[in-house]
Length: 225
Image 1 (cartoon, one colour):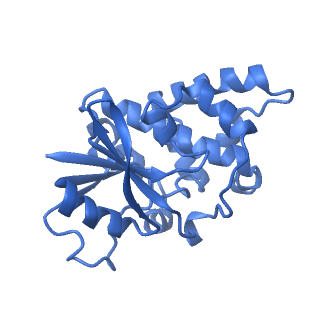
Image 2 (cartoon, rainbow, N blue to C red):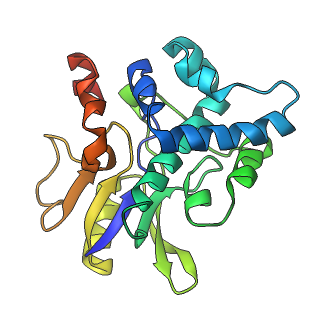
């Protein structure tokens, strides 16, 4: 069964409760610390990523550049954890902006190169919004071939369209939302779009992370998922 990892939501850690839980995951902490080493070396006034993750929402939202970096670092950490027990995904679905985790996960950059690009390369993305009002993002599919991941012709602002195309043309039968939060399927989703495919959330798949959602308030669970 072909599997696709989906990085479709950039508002994944907008809430302090989610960030508090995320930094209890060892692979996420290790990724943040690895990135911090590079930040400390190249920034005259480096931001402490762990302190930012533990800050209140208003402070976290105010630091847009490092907020974007943290989102991707969390997703990279979650994927590294996933790959400890699972094979490499045949497809990645992600944005192509400078902050996209796909740069590291496709092997195009190492983490140090990624951090440097985020800090110094001009970002062409016009909007980065909160999870409560996510604006459309242009998503692309990256398909694993003999020489690594290659950019496919699939491109859309709607993750549902990407899923349909990958199901029909690439025989992808399993889609894993990396998140956390903002699952791919909601009560409003068209069942036709998701027939004959499995859609899962990465944290929910991990038997050692069953505490993650239970630790959140009820209202936040509804907003997040």
